[in-house]
Length: 179
Length: 336
Image 1 (cartoon, rainbow over the protein chains, first blue to last red):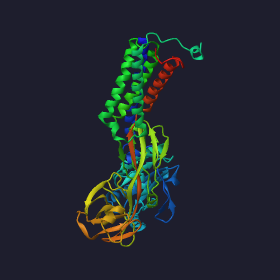
Image 2 (cartoon, each protein chain N blue to C red; image 1 turned 90 degrees about the vertical axis):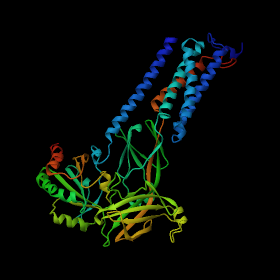
Image 3 (cartoon, rainbow over the protein chains, first blue to last red; image 1 turned 30 degrees about the vertical axis):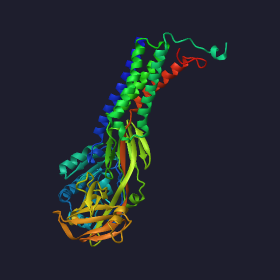
Image 4 (tube, each protein chain N blue to C red; image 1 turned 45 degrees about the horizontal axis):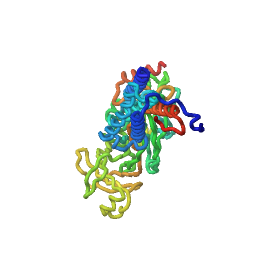
């Protein structure tokens, strides 16, 4: 009797301990998986909203499913956005034939400000007007510019905060284009 | 021989009145443990679960249950010893689960995050996705939060609902929020940023601060319009606050007071004004529109780990049931 009860009690205590320790490790894993900012979105499906394009047509991220998309969130008053844009245009020219789409999404401004910006910098890639800043919130932007790389299946591969050089942009999109 | 005597089972050997007393005490303690710990699932936000008094009550009850198991190991209470020993072991597991979520568990906290933010909920084994919002959905006030579990499955938490996930109880708690839109004098839309907020591009003010103004403490927030080089403070006036402040034309209505500063934090001339929900207001060359509504917060309370609670309860119920089946059902006392 004594041995049987002792054994049973030890078994129950061991199972409870395993459950509590297992839960602790599962919590740690979960914490690592969900950090803040756009970098934390890797692996998540990319949000898509119907917006007006600079040329007046309606467009959305979903329309480019099946192609690799580099989304760039920007605004005309943002100095780092202005200095980054020529590299974006260059990347678009270089990788367009490989199936890369560069999508510039102006945050919170009317068409006039975005049109002036695009004209000054001679931008060829499509520009979307997001007056309500929905993409900015959906992509957890913690500043401008913010760059999001979306794979052919519509999932976010990388989310990057801040200005990027051409080499950094290539480094972000090339592995995804090769998939 | 009566029918009751006909189903009489063999007497439990070595069981006496003192055994019966300790058995009753053990069952009472087990009942107390169950009541104390399961109460956490019924009212998870009650702060009393995290006090030493609650922990002391659980430990006291656990000591009663534990002492029975200890004596049973040494051969006391005869045939009842094994099944009730199992039951008390189960009660102890429940007690440990209750203490872990009570005294050792975190106090209830309410997460208020910006739209688009993802909040990890390690205790629930999930993450909360705070939804994107526009002025219409904010005014409706029926916005829910999506909870995505580790296995990739997701579920929606709506206002008034409570969900148990892992060792956490989650309740949606809507709070006052205001959606702001800004235009320049020509009517062109302007970018709104919240440099002090984790969600830089959020147009939603959630008023996390409290500021004393005109004898009242008002919820406050701030945002910036970088293209106009303006920083704007916003103070929320509830219906009560507008009535108490005797603001002409606003009594009994929700409103937001704006104060427009330049880049150095100096108030701009004609930069102060009160706006109703849905109205446009002209301030220092800017046209601001505010929509007042509610945005969800998420209250998280620690609850006992379901696996430990289930395992403990199963042992407790099984042990008690087994003990009950070993005694006569009629015509005899529980003990000799």
